[in-house]
Length: 236
Image (cartoon, rainbow, N blue to C red):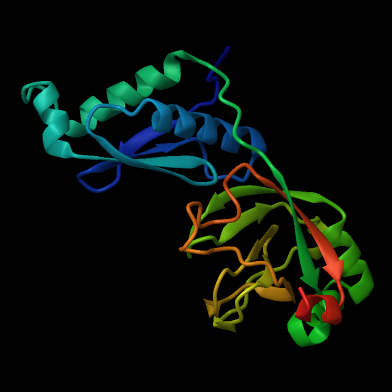
């Protein structure tokens, strides 16, 4: 059994949702607590709850305000009722619900034709392209959250030696593009505007709406990037 020891704030998100905020930082232990609460609420929803959405270090809980108020015959606001229930859940000794954490190997072609920003990033960091690739493929990354687009996974953290700011203006980014922004790395699941520095591309499909589980990755998963050739990319 494990009880929560992290500090948090609960505040309204519009008139039919609340946010549980553990701090605006990228931290594995905080993200694990977010996912524990997410799994707890998924497995045993609060009365009136409609949806729960995890992020890096916070959780949004959406609810039906009318149903929540009915529970107390109007003696409490929906926000106060949901806040009290969430606090109670957090203050309980929660069973350590282990997040399903699979290791996913993602092949990536880092050749210049598919990596328009790789030379820029290498030059900016005064390293070779080969060294940049080695750094990017030498560790496992935690999927902290999904967002922005269906299947877009925010992963961290890259070596600080290859961390770099986003582009000042977004451009069109090809589906499967692997990018870096700050100390995050991620994969664009479809062609769209984007501002991350693109250092490669994967042939793997990250989002397929026709599948029972449309997203390949989930929050809490681990990712290992594997360098492949252009020929391997085209014949994947």
